[in-house]
Length: 187
Image 1 (cartoon, rainbow, N blue to C red):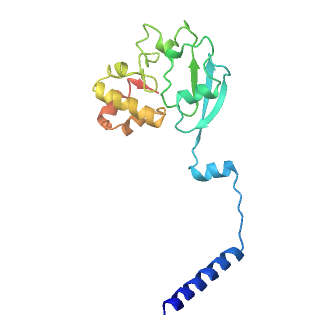
Image 2 (cartoon, one colour; image 1 turned 120 degrees about the vertical axis):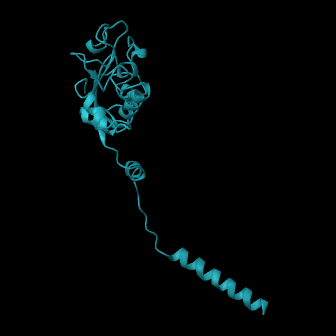
Image 3 (cartoon, helix red, strand yellow; image 1 turned 180 degrees about the horizontal axis):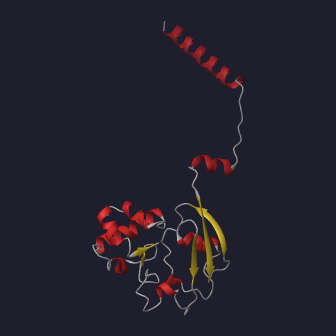
């Protein structure tokens, strides 16, 4: 009886081997580009104009969520005279922005010049939501350091504010606070 069971198993295994060796094989070739596209979800492109002290200034197309370090790298890296400390490499870039890398000793743009009200203060004394630091945001009524940090965190995660009304998306800012800030801020 044991011999019959072993013989039956041997025949079954042999039939299985024959079927797999004679079965047609379909070959599919995927290029590296197609494989990369299939493996990752399509990210929307962002365009950034990199100027100043970089190797190759110009307009660059990067993936959504790219950071300043990616834009500088796309432009060939910092130039010899670049003031690397003046650039926040960790900041998320947004579509349509211009990133200027200053040379050492270059005067800051007007909104960052001494006496202009601090970083992020626009002409006319309004606070620019897209460039203000915590200290500047903290000068606004009803905005303390924690709320200022939430505004900056929102900007870093979502890109530039496109309108003052975008403040409503920041946790803790409602209609009343927006009404109090509307005439004091700009984008």
